[in-house]
Length: 407
Picture (cartoon, rainbow, N blue to C red):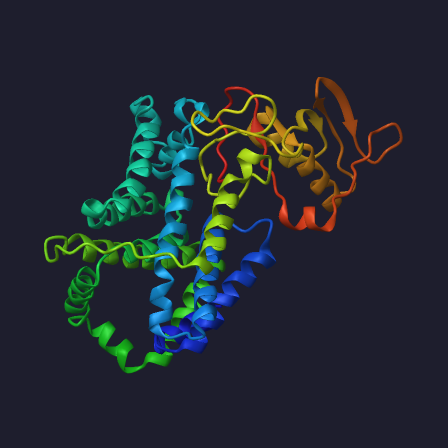
């Protein structure tokens, strides 16, 4: 996939390599399941919509690519709206347990807790994430919605204490699809005027294959070697995101046209429905990670769900079989959430398949049960192959203990 992306940078009109990259990303998403993160899921749905459109048109030309953009915009709005709505829960709105406060503390290296701003961080995030899809939907605010979205997500990525440039990079590319061609041309012209003055950029243009190879090595491998290397890659990511954001911000008066949303084709509808079902999974009793609920603190597990707007209707018992921890021989479980957590039995069964010596004592449906491999203990039933491959459930806190996870 990285190689295909590098070739596309050199040959942006290569239809074959575009299809290779789109297919490779979907394959990578499936191969890494059930641990594939949220933005991988978003990009997989986007790429699937593009490939289906090309197959329907029997062409991979620019017209076929453009015909997929209305569906891509809908998929983007579904995923983003799901993330925003997930924040409307009692845990996120409580300053002590909110992920918003925890993230602000990480990003500021412990400075924000001293400010004692109460629910400020939670309210700020909820206002921003709620307003962005609304601004992008309305024609007269669409252009400005892109700018608000880029500012918000650049701020989330700007601190090395809470670094999510990969997630923001994916969103930036999709946000640009809500701008008109006139807007895009002004942005490109602004960026080109700046880069044309750079000797580094001129050298890179003279040796494109060398530049692409170095970029693949740096962004594909260097960032995994040492903390110093990761810091360098993080800095370059911020320069890219910051440059893109400034290019969009500084051209907001240059164009007045609004990008039409476009018409969704019937072949794209199943992908949109699949995206909706993926986002609805935690509320229907399905998997609870990688489903556009990141850093929300939402709890649909057990008998006391915390969502304030979306009802929870469990179609399975996967989330209802919640084991409230009392003791375990697993250090990761023991330390998670200060030990005050509940873990769906499905997750414990997965862990037992990876660690056959796992022992857990906890409360399940009001009864104390000891799970483990020894005599007198309740054995963990192994998962079916498809359960092990596709289902993943997060641990949840059972009291006011601060515990923030990215799911």
